Image (cartoon, rainbow, N blue to C red; front, top):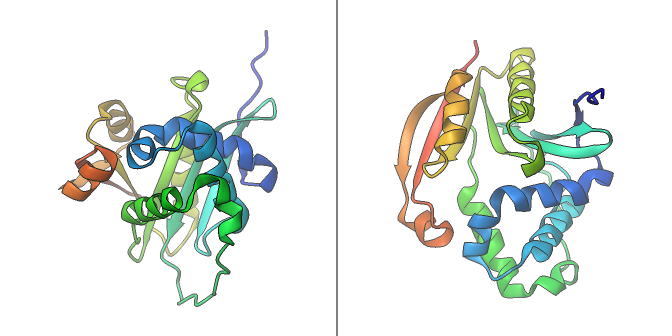
Length: 208
């Protein structure tokens, strides 16, 4: 039996439902600590975010595809070379009405606390998720290699970075195999209270 190849493609609107589900698989533990939302509501929240904010001006989301199925995703962002003062229209509350305003407020606060502002020359991996049925098959490595190649082809970028929680030593080990090194360890009481994760490692891969 021939195994279908895995391709890495730019995010498209038609992938929104599948990528939203992937994010729930990857981060449900954090966000279900923060809110009372179930998997369906969390997936709807991310899907609505994709509809209203498809991508950051200085960012890119990619999808790993096999047989037309999204089996992984990665999102990167960097500091814009010039000040982008684009005004993004805020979505209507009605778009998120099913979730409840309090859940929405807590989710937006949580995402803002997880947000990282890249420095000049830094390409930051905001998230990387592989579907549970496709883990340990090299999908995560392919996505990370795509990000590495992206940085190497961009003259204004020279560092790839990410955060990994202390409770995920398996992911940290993978990053270390790919030559990421821990640059800083943070212990955050606020993140512990909101996400039940207090220790976060900030890791860097210098590419130039």
